[in-house]
Image (cartoon, rainbow, N blue to C red; front, side, top):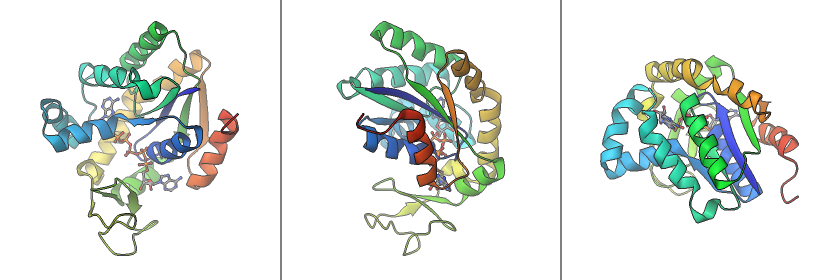
Length: 218
Ligand code: AP5
């Protein structure tokens, strides 16, 4: 049973580690960015409202995202724990999560930050290409697919996320420093905060995380 929050700037590797943790510890990895992108794809009213914020790299308003995230952790598959990737991102969201968990009579186990240099964040995001079909992530320089523009996993088409162009990425990083970094203090005060060195390889980062959480299956 484990309830986790992943903190970290855009491109720090939250999604990459969320998948590894979810698989190893048997908990659902919930990405609010993925939920919002799915709404945009389906053209829902929420997706239309979120789109204008996401495309410029700003946060969608708290009232839009809080309800979605809290509803998601109320579902059956979260009874034995969950990992939140990209929520909370503001103090208001963190307080709403605290209230919800208190009502459920449960606690978070850890809030794990992934620390990465700003220029590495820009390089990782602007070079990222994502599969339209299975969501697998590649990088044009550090992790290119065997065939340009084609997913190694499923043969799907790779695309450049609308918010992964340099100007938008730099705004996302500023927004992170202005609004989300404050959560480090919030979780330190609750005694839940831990940080790992995100400049290491994904496997090395995951090893550090396991050092914090303890080996899977225990
Ligand atoms: P979201 O999709 O969550 O984007 P993000 O937080 O900006 O994070 P990214 O997906 O860009 O990066 P990541 O940290 O997951 O890194 P990844 O593992 O992919 O949110 C998008 C937008 O939705 C927000 O801007 C906002 O508008 C809105 N939103 C979402 N949640 C919200 C909320 N709670 N409140 C308000 N608005 C919200 O890795 C990045 C790249 O680096 C990949 O190519 C990967 O292969 C590579 N990589 C990963 N780890 C390493 C490593 N250790 N070494 C080298 N390369 C690595």
